Amino acid sequence: MKLDEFKAEFWERTDYDRAFRGSFGRYMTEIERAALERVMGDLRAPVLLDLGCGHGRFLRWLAPRAGRLVGLDRSGRLLGVASESLARQPLGIPAALLRASATAIPLADASIDAVTCVRVIQHIPQQDLVLHEIRRVLRPGGTLVLVQYNWASPHGLVRAVKLPVKAALRSLLRRLGRQPRFDERTRWTCWPLLKRQLHRAGFGIDAATGAWIFPLQYFRRRRSNDAFRPFLRLALAAEKLADRTPFRFAGGYLVVRCRARGAPAARLGRKPRGGSALSR
Image (tube, rainbow, N blue to C red):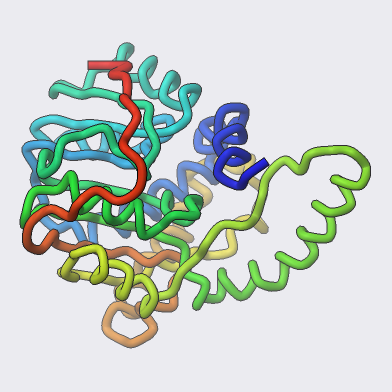
């Protein structure tokens, strides 16, 4: 099974959305939203695309910044969760959910004013193709806000130590005739590499920083959300200090706001498959 096919199957059967209902998941969402706000500023967009929206955990938060909101994801199951949420509590603005691949976005050239993409590209082997697709659908001068895991960070170093152990366990499971639950071959990045990728795809950098991920996995996930508040305040205070130093690019996340330059890029690769609007 190819890596992209494996991951597509994984997202269809995973309980990923349930992980964000607990205190730890809510904490991570707050960390990510705070990081996004630091680079988004007063961004407003007539049409905003949340690429890799999953079960829609950012859609409601993004709605005040958009005149119309589009969520795109490859997982029909996660989009179903998002659709049910929007049906129960509408956003108050026109909204649509599309099932499609980020490598073949079923939207017209220069039809989007802003794109958010939070921890999505690292799961896709064809990263340059995704960035070119984002540039294609963005209007000239449109905004991309991107969050990716950073291997040049303490979080990345911990992962580097864990990877050989997980690889050995996956190999053992396959020998026993069992399919590992998840594949760790995600493609993390670092600031120099990400900057080159964005420039190649036709983007200019407006703002960039890192977001630190504190080792909260060592705390019990069953604690109330209030128990994580002091750590959130500590993390945000540390990030404000780090923003003034070269260490701002040593956080577990890289958070970038960039601008589409020139005319939309020509389509690369295969033609897009049609997406279906699941909610409006």
